[in-house]
Image 1 (cartoon, rainbow, N blue to C red):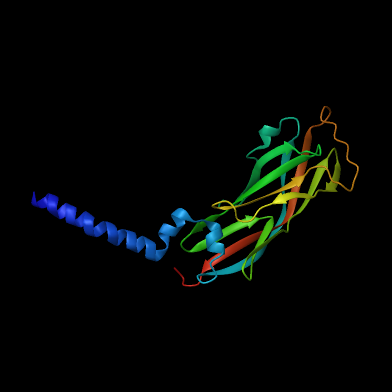
Image 2: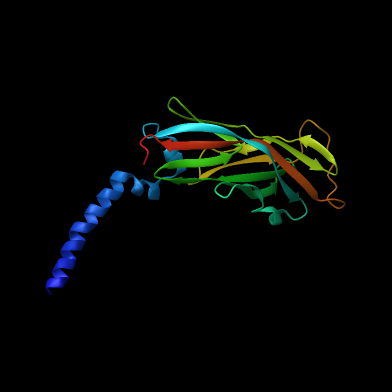
Length: 198
């Protein structure tokens, strides 16, 4: 009976103390918030941008759109950019969407993306930095953005491109060759680092 009382006292005292410690360190916030909240917290986190060198490519099969979902464009072991969706848009163009996935914890957050997320007075500014090109049947051409997001996901963002450029005549013959390669360059590493060296 005495052990049960001690256990009950331990729970009654320990639970609020544990919750308080989790709250004061910010760990509870990580359960409810995400990378966007860290990025927006100028009081606790420094912000750095670093260019990622090189070109990164993914092969897209236009005959089997679903087979492309999940294909990796960039992966350094901690950050990924992968195909999240591909569909035929209203103007009969192929729209390939990419999802960037980074990491975050109490010490800060990091993200590699084609979008630059910068702090501006009163909020965020985000714009596509990556250059994109496609290669089809030996011909390489610039492709253009179809959309982009802010830090709308717990661990990142998304952006997309139209496969057929609006400023150049490109004829796709899916029956003969359904493979197109998309290549991105000028990716950017975002770092939000704790000011307090946690």
